Length: 127
Image 1 (cartoon, one colour):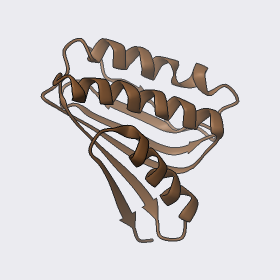
Image 2: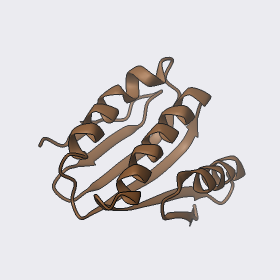
Image 3: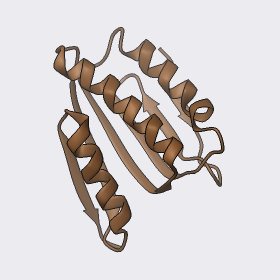
Image 4: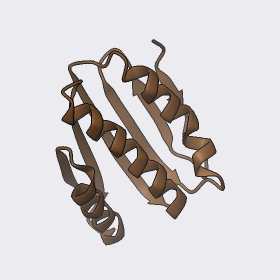
């Protein structure tokens, strides 16, 4: 299976999903006009990866800002990961990074942590 690599752009985050080590990374700003379209390849990749995942899968999120439609796409990813985790396909964990000065991102992480149903760690980043 091929890795998924999408480089960061002005309105979209970098997506680096590594099939060999089960490390998934989202970083940057996520304010695409059509989030479902942007995250479509990631959802397709997850569907394929889910057929034969690594024993452990870790999603690291380092978003500076994201819009409502991106939030829905992130939630859809968490639902997929939770399904895998609950059914024993792979041990899943999420790292949600936030900057000390950005309470909105921290609160969003807390919100997702409550909804995710998977091990979820909030990581405080100092400037």
